Length: 146
Image 1 (cartoon, rainbow, N blue to C red):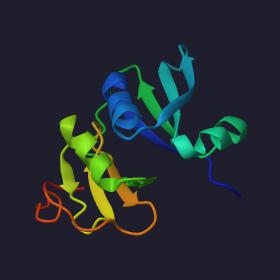
Image 2 (image 1 turned 180 degrees about the vertical axis):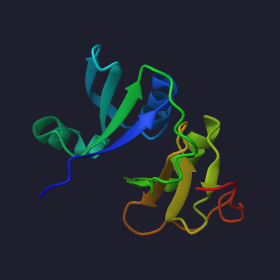
Image 3 (image 1 turned 90 degrees about the vertical axis):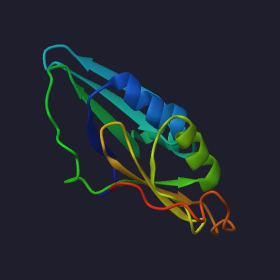
């Protein structure tokens, strides 16, 4: 057995690609438009996983956009996606500058939580050792739910 992908239903392709690609740095590696089924599948890979994702079609994040409007609620029934990042402070700063709320700031230099435009919880973990505590993150309070 091997892990293939995680599927997340999205409400807006542009908003989701801005978050996952522009914010988190993922890259679109494949897209399937299914007119009969009325859906679009967009497969994303983390930069370090892209060669493997292209060769083996894994590990991937599958964004599913259903053309007909559906209410997915708050998405709290889904746990979270986790990404290892090179610099948790830079990643959180980039997301914050895009208007993303840092729900659980990286006070410890190691872990943060944010939510996608579709309210999916995203855990960010610092690659290697935790970074030294730094402001504004060290004293920032939690915001909302994740």
